[in-house]
Amino acid sequence: MPSLSVFGAQWGDEGKGKLIDLLSGSEADVVVRYQGGANAGHTVVVGAEKYVLHLIPSGILHPEKLNVIGNGVAVDPFKFLEEVEGLRARGVAVDGTNLRLSANAHVIFEHHRRLDQLSEKWRGEGRIGTTGRGIGPCYADKAARTGLRVGDLLDPEHCRVRLKAALAEKNALFEHVHHEAPLELETQLDRYVALGHRLEPFVGDTGAQVRAAYRAKKRILFEGAQGAMLDIDAGTYPFVTSSNTGTNGISAGASFPPRWIDRAIGIAKAYATRVGEGPFPTELENEIGARIREQGNEYGSTTGRPRRCGWLDAVALRYALEISGADGWVVTNLDVLTGLDTIQAAVGYRAGGREVRDWPGGMADFDALEPVYKSHPGWTEDITRVRRFADLPKSARAYVEWLEHEVGVPIVMLSVGPEREQVIPRGKFLSLAQVMSRGTGA
Ligand code: GDP
Ligand code: IMO
Ligand code: MG
Image (cartoon, rainbow, N blue to C red; front, top):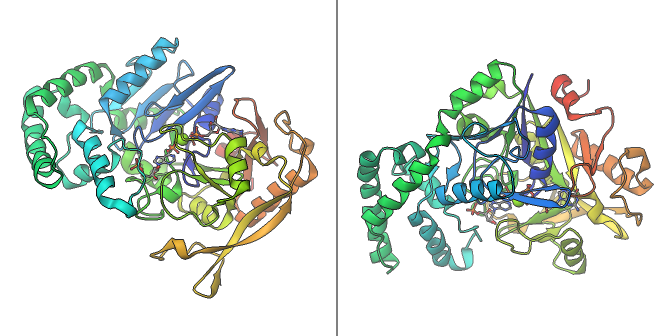
């Protein structure tokens, strides 16, 4: 059986957690995170219980499934252990048998979190609005080859040598550039070696484990974090995160051959949101945006910040789905649009006196993009209990069919509420299993 990439196709928070939880129940044996870190906040609602997962894959609520944090994830050991303990306290079984952590994943240290916040201050008006979780500085150290990996924490003497070198440079920055107190080597070392000891039962060669699972015909689900427009290469640079967020990140971040990635599914809301700074051509800084925020409860799962809300951007979405090679996509939060007289979606942009229909990838300043919209009539009926496409109001069906046509990739499922069962399978694909086994157009 195949492997499936499930990724965010907008600016994050598309409902990946809900979909991954749903799919891991019926259509996966292994769920793998391959990039990002605890900047992610993936919400899973099960009855009256709500779980927000940051580092641990969203398959963890299903016993018997293997959950893997791959080498491409930036791991804050505090956050990892806090999440493990939080889940255990709520009765979820988590141990080294159902949760594995790559020895090659880079570690987020206190100095990374501090630098994340200090760099934001120095950026001033140009700040990114990061989650402050140390993601950027950790990945920067990975690329600069000054980082430490999870495996390094398990060898105290080796850890001392590496951390000493790393802290010497960081402390020079803290003291002489930022005018802050330095961090003390022994304190940091004691703390992180102790954390390493607690991580040990989870640590291993996850790449080898996932490849072996694939060879053994297990079903592998790759859980993307963030979204395509936050991708460090494909997104609205520099207002992005520091990793490759889609199918493009899997191979390096999970040590999994690209040719073994069989299918890809993008997730997008029926509108768009963005947290933090940066270009967002379809943003609605008006009553409609505020209404979407309230109706969709659009407040960050990680930082609690209000999300910026706007219309769906079909141009950016088409681009996002193409980069990750999507066979299909899922529309979430369709219910949030209920009650709007008119729904709009961007089908092009005006920039520099010209109209473009495709994402202007080479552009330096995406702020200059002015969307060209298409309008659709809205609906007023409550759709949260609808489970069949044919039972949706006519204009909701028309909006979805139009979206599918405009974006040019089949919509395989709709989501009409946060709970597991609030989904509507679409079209000729009765289930995602069919997408996985037959591909598109079958
Ligand atoms: P993720 O980061 O992509 O996993 O998404 P988040 O969990 O950060 O944000 C999605 C939010 O929307 C969460 O609060 C979900 O519970 C909620 N959600 C998911 N699907 C739906 C849906 O179809 N309708 C509504 N109203 N909420 C949804
Ligand atoms: P999930 O997985 C939405 C945003 C931050 C900021 C930028 C860089 O829940 O979809 P970082 O801390 O990564 O250096 O911040 O990226 N961001 C997210 N926005 N959802 C996320 O994750 C995000 N992770 C990072 O707000 O604009
Ligand atoms: Mg989120």
